[in-house]
Image 1: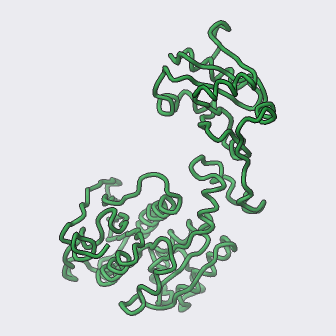
Image 2 (image 1 turned 120 degrees about the horizontal axis):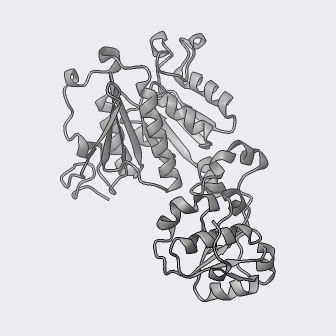
Image 3 (image 1 turned 120 degrees about the vertical axis):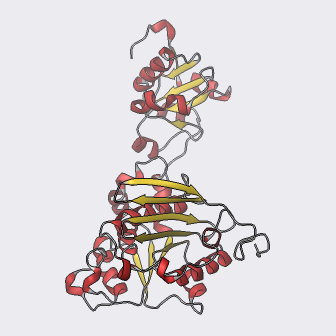
Length: 365
């Protein structure tokens, strides 16, 4: 990464402040953990190790004036040299410490103590991710997610949401653990056969992460209780296995503007999508009329591969994270299908139906 010294420009902290005032874009080539400890507010994080892979994406204009900095000036010098060698025409490295920058009145964003030391340790691998950081982890800890069903799909979703720090998990299920559940419903264990599923789930989740609050709703979702159950939650996860409940949940979620992450499984096949009311299609847009029971039998009749709920459920959990954090692209408007027999994913577009009785043009928004 060496380059002739004549091609490099270095400035002091005072010079860097002057360039910043002239509109130079600031690149911070430190590591995410350093960034999280404090950074220049208008800077863009681009760690030195990521420079070759991400420079074109982060800085597509090679004529843009760039001010590169690190902690004291060594890594920024190497980064500036690489940028110049790869066609960037106006690159300056700050050869000074960030303390010098701050002492001269340079803008600085100090980290907020959003997490306790114990939380910083437990969630350290997530906090390192630029799109999450302490602020994103705080969002997860403050979030409330409701799972409809503590069975095959609800099990992997609940396990990974709790492990990753979702603050409150609600579980709606009126069933008890049966021995036939244990092949796929990994929240439950053999010694809990006959125990209410919500209680069994709470024991497992509390052992995994005592910080996650588990609320048991030991009841079946009905037209009388659906709005009461979903009203206090930020995201709803649909892990049901019958169409009546799916339509019931969809209509209430649209009325209350609650996003729903939907999953379904059948033998070797799984499907996942996300419904964001009025921003995309709803369940009735995708399935305007309910198919007859013989065309959509439950798992108890048709069977299901044991690992399939795990695969589908983890994709659902991933959708929840994106909705809570407000990052990435969700599956809203897209139906993701997985064929476990061939190990193939495919996707179809789902359009919002203007005539939909739940979310169409005539529906109340």
